[in-house]
Amino acid sequence: MPYILEDASLRESPDGSLPMLSALVVLKASAWPSGGFFQLARRSPFSRPGDDTELWARELAHLAKHYSAP
Image (cartoon, rainbow, N blue to C red; front, side):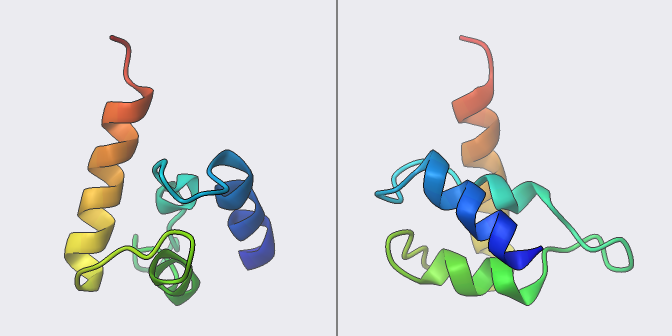
């Protein structure tokens, strides 16, 4: 599953400028993304800063803004 999520995020945004779709996928037991999401988010081309909580919250906000109707 991690490779599918990584592929989806990279296909949607090869340069890392768009929000990461994989931020929407969470573990059932914790309702949080897996550690792989945070590793991908911090790696190039995404290079997202911040601790896990703020990184994920910011990514979700960017997704909502990017995909909401104008």
